[in-house]
Image (cartoon, rainbow, N blue to C red; front, side):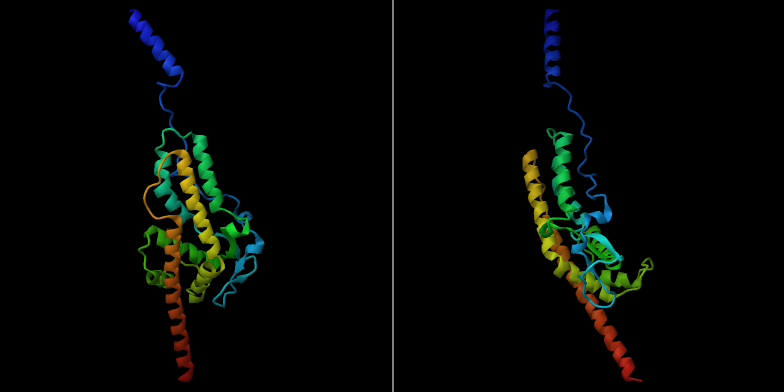
Length: 251
């Protein structure tokens, strides 16, 4: 009897001090975290705008009502890396509190949605029609894990019955100029910032990152893939020009 009383007393003490307390269930899920910042165009600064005039093959500095707020390094690309390399360690952690998890995820979210300072900006105004092309390209590339051929994307842009606007190789080329020339330095900088933050937050949380490609490598592969899209679109535009010229000569 005395032993049972002593055991109960010790168990009560250990439970109240947390030694035998049941582990709390985390309500914060890294895997299900939404990295999209609300606010729409408020994320973008007008001085960082780019527009496409609908005719030329390049985008120019400027802003008009046909522009929308665009994440150059798409959220889906960043989220793919975070959820495959960072989230397993965070979600399986037995020591991180919900507050600590939220703080880390909010840091990553802030980098992805950065509108300033200028050299770290990931959000720009970009012409809505061209931004839609970019969004479709990223979606196809991400969902296929990079296996969707550039020529297949161009062909889909030509033939898809779901597109509201007619196919335009100039539009695809303009997106390429925006990605490779106007904003590449920013997007690469942001990819580095994300990777550095992932490493720092994992170290702070005392868990390791899963093996896999970094944000910088993943985004670099997409940029290389889209250069192939541009090459295919340029071939289309050249062929259309030759056909048009041949038609005029035969008259």
